[in-house]
Length: 233
Image 1 (tube, rainbow, N blue to C red):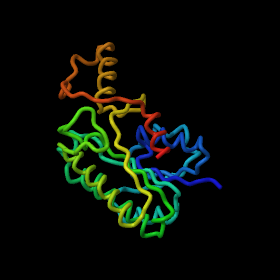
Image 2: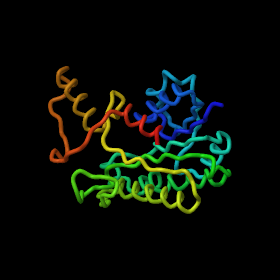
Image 3: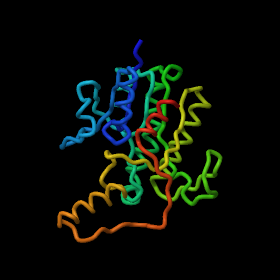
Image 4: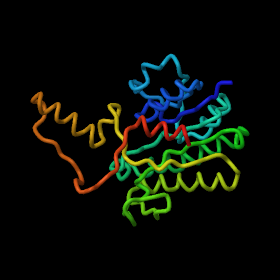
């Protein structure tokens, strides 16, 4: 019998690669997308006819319950988030509503429709939890020290996953993701920002490139490897 997966953030870098992987594994794939005045499905256009999309948002509890009731997934992958650190300082409340409380809403939707013991939930967490790092390299037991509204929101998401796993015996886990890239990386992130700026400079359309902190160090991987790890968890 085919398994059914529900993916939030399916139009993003990771969501699109995960959808491809799940289709290869024989899953029926559902995705949640936010209603927008412009199309934002470019990363999944090539598999559009193989997946089922639902309009929804992590800030809308009743909508999530409705989708969960319709789909009744075997697995849920929560990749939806406001994931830009700088933006989180400009929109801290929205970041909290999406990344922190949004995770809680998803857990409650699973419980509300009676799937607490039947559905597995993967939560995409982040190395930003470590923030002001307490040791190098970091591992699962390294203390957290978040330093942005994004990281703080994700820390709530991390612990509410742990809490619901322990309180309700749900199959729910966190994957702490470090930086990972691909050709589908969003244009506001550093690698894509650099490469697109170089292309514009060569074409004579841009004079200079402005970057933020150049002293930070990150571990980098490829998005395809990361989504495979999500599925294995």
